[in-house]
Amino acid sequence: MPGRHITPVKILIDQHLPFLLAHGGANTQVEQTRLALERAGVEAEFLRWWDENQRGDLIHFFGVPTAGYLQLAQLKHLPVITNTLFTDTCNRPLARLKRQGWLVKTILALPFGEGIKQQLTWRTYQRTDHNVVSLEAEKTVLQVVYGVPAERITVVPIGLTETFMRAGAAPRTEPYLICTGTITERKNFVELAQMARAAQTPILFVGKPYHPNDPYGLRFKSLVDNQWVKHQPHVDSEWEMVRLLQSARGFVFMSNYENWCLSAHEAAACGLPLLVQDQNWSRERFGNQARYFPTIGVTAANIALLKQFFHDAPDLPGPQLQLHGWDAVAQQLKAVYEKVLAA
Image 1 (spheres, rainbow, N blue to C red):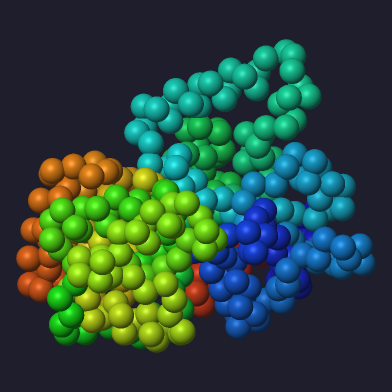
Image 2 (cartoon, rainbow, N blue to C red):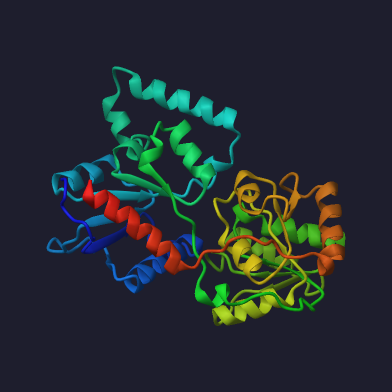
């Protein structure tokens, strides 16, 4: 609807996974986006699914809305921006993405199975009014796999709170590395703990599982010996997390896949050298300013690399890269909203 709005009046924020089911960086992104938008003068509120009288000018959806969701929004003349985390897909080789794109195009072109196709999310990225991602690697997924034109994609980084933006480097005097995040299979905390014991390299793990009785979390807990594997399940504040990060020699992380890794960026903001997995997201963000695990898992090469990193870390600088506060992120999103609403 040309000329509908030049300045957005109200943004409705929706997302696909209730916070009570899983904690983590995705929740932080949703919450901090809303707060930063309000500071930027953009009225923003969470979409109340029970309130048929709620009004807004644009939906910012974190995740992948269904085809029916988009159809109903279009009937209401309510634009939808889709903000997707291509956590696994963005780390695949380009050749594999091209094969995946050929498969998607072939299946969608079939003259039958429309009912099944409507259940797929593959069409979402073309049918949504605009796509927001955090990495160029994710933009490549949208273009190569789903055929979305570049002008309908905007790369907006994930931000850090002012606490981390102001943190800066510190002496890093404690004799251990640090790993922060949710204790879950994808993050490989158990495997990293096994490597710490094999390398006799102390690591402080900060985080908790999704549930106290989670089997993977219990496996990790059985490895905590307070010598090589230390564990702090909870911190009271962001400043406490900053203090823990600034005290450690370096940051280590070995997840199966990430799309941005908020934990690694918080560590970088505190001046820590990084040892992370060698993937598209990490190479895009840190380039040659980090050390990399060549593979995922407990291997002799990874154990040796961990031990060497611990030895070298006191003399290694943290990566020098542009970090983004949430207020800067909000300004970029505001420009996207205005573009979509003016179309």
